[in-house]
Image (cartoon, rainbow, N blue to C red; front, side, top):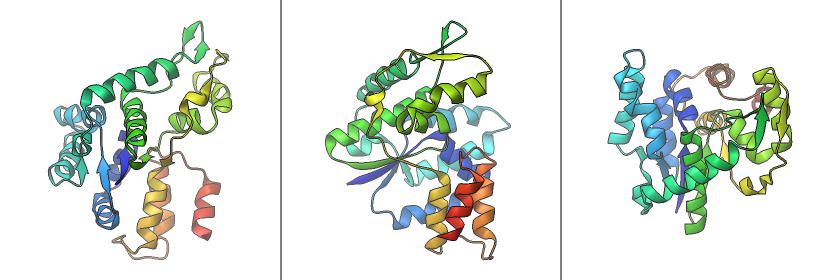
Length: 224
């Protein structure tokens, strides 16, 4: 058993760029399940479907859920209360690690925390998994926590200090971005548009919709 756990950021990159057909094609070749948590569902479907500006995108994502392209954790027998409990633990830990202007700095939202929580539950159940997330902060929390102070100082324009938290709590999570998913789709011939520039167009499209990928990384992927 294996799964890709989707955060809101990656699905928003796909839907805002009209790339849901490519996501469906990826699901066909993936020998596992595409999962969203209830908190991510609230962020990408339940709330935006009530806002006219975002209604169409929410309806498209709801269709993926209705068609079981996206599925809920219950398909693996995971209970919502277990995800919620672990999400709150992760939120409390992450959002108390840094201090700015005398207050704790919020690093992650509930949707992101729920993805981390579900990943840890899957690990405990022996279910191979990776988290699809485009947002930089959560990935840095896991991969390079020593750089978080500098990142948040740049974002918040204020001095940030650390509580010297033991970030080993966040070790072990695996991530993938919309950029890597689209690279796979391109290499597998799943992209509808056939043009020599399409890979460049795909990667920059998701970059400008929030995928944290540098121009250097894009150029490296194009050379592969």
